[in-house]
Image (cartoon, rainbow, N blue to C red):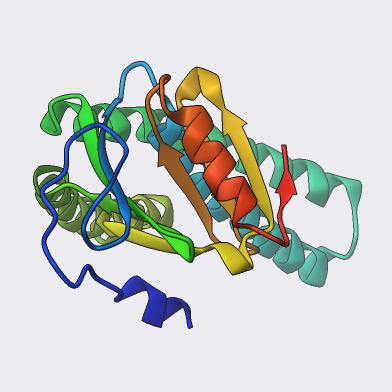
Length: 217
């Protein structure tokens, strides 16, 4: 199902601008330029990916240590030390990778949103999409060569250029107005909808009214 949604594309090309408008295809379209220095949304995604990688590695290390030495306090302390070291390294790599991505992107992440009564689609604009694909290839290669799965994870994150969220499957809608962001979360997928100060209330109310199963906050 998820794969099918990811391949969903617009049936016709729509030339839109930065204002939320209803177009001839019956959908709302708008562009948004995310300032990557002021809005940390993309960096948060990177750290979530790295954090999940660290957690999985910590569980694996603890399981291996427990099987060989039994459940001991010393084993737990060792795993925590190793995990802490990895977290520090990944934190630095995340910052450096994000700054590289932001610099190559011109410090702006441009997104095209398409919204109708069924759902909302988040697409990287052509310029941002090309940059993301180039960086994804480089980070995946660097991760494989260095043996750092977190770097590979960041590359996979960067390679994702489109996300479709169906309102019927949404479990939570939350507005973060200080980031001009509306969180539209399914069980396993989390979409971010960016919109200007002037129109965030309209988009938030529209999405909230079309998500019958969602917790609204």
